[in-house]
Length: 454
Image 1 (cartoon, one colour):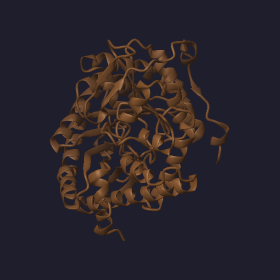
Image 2 (cartoon, rainbow, N blue to C red):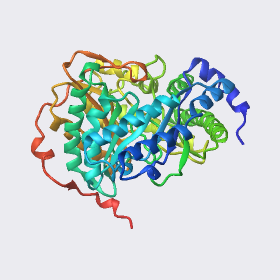
Image 3 (spheres, rainbow, N blue to C red):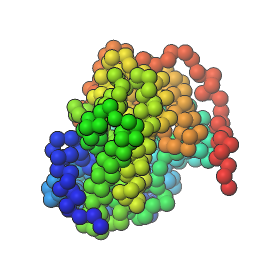
């Protein structure tokens, strides 16, 4: 049984070490909002979200005050909209009306973001999927709180290269549509492989079709807590290092478990999962890169970085699963460049490149995340980067993702400011050699042999 005394132990973590519950995310099934009448779809969507999530923000605020644990975001994830709008939407602009309805509902209930403006196309694209994908640039430009994701591959199905090719162009178009805001729309768009159904973190959150009608998923975060704990074992053996990370991850996850259970009870909605990811922020002392440096690296990106990150990710998972019976989502270490001051410092020092980040994604939670690149980067190059990350996810049976931002009008050596939790980022160089003949082949890359487990 979890009790309030366990939270008391974490007071110092909250006050001095940047421990927080990063998000309470309410997942909502919108399949019963489907209709062949677009106005009816929009009306049903708005009504369901605003009725189920009306108390989400106030409940989160109350729990935060009572337990003294910061809850940074209150969010909503929904059924992939390409499924909900399939019968009603005949053009990309039809889907944009749904995006605006979702944005209005999110503003009404007061959440930070709503995720699920999404399509799952790992094996093929329906007409509805393609229409939604083509609507993304306009949808991102005409809304504030919508996050979009497209799953282009999986270990079981392979990689849909037609979708990968299309997404390179969609990312570039989204950058153009939002260029007055430094291409901010791309910061709310992610391309995934092996996307989980229960991820509470944006921009990849959606409510999978295998989920309950509504659930509460919680994402915890504590890079600063882990960094502080490791300072006390500096120079000790790997065994001591690993035990310290596991024990710390256990404590962090227990806090998230308590918050999740309370939110579930008060809202009358079933508890889903705890995502125990180490998700950094731009705040000093809240950095995954700082943990890697505490383990023994001069900068993230130095030789040994991938091994150190693998160790960290594994121990976080081992500690977390002891604290909660329902761990899910992504659950590991995030390495977003713009959201992690230590990563930004490593890029500026020349220690960290996109190629090294790609290697690191083989052993961590997600992938190439919040990376700003020159605005003149070709769509085919973006598609090639997506294909590489999807291949890592497919072969390693893990989630990988690309959230890359070609900042229109800016080049290497410049910096882009996104603000808030999205932080700021140096523009990173990309490999300029051409991959067009590869990404322009039609069809899909087959699933690896080890996917055949039936």
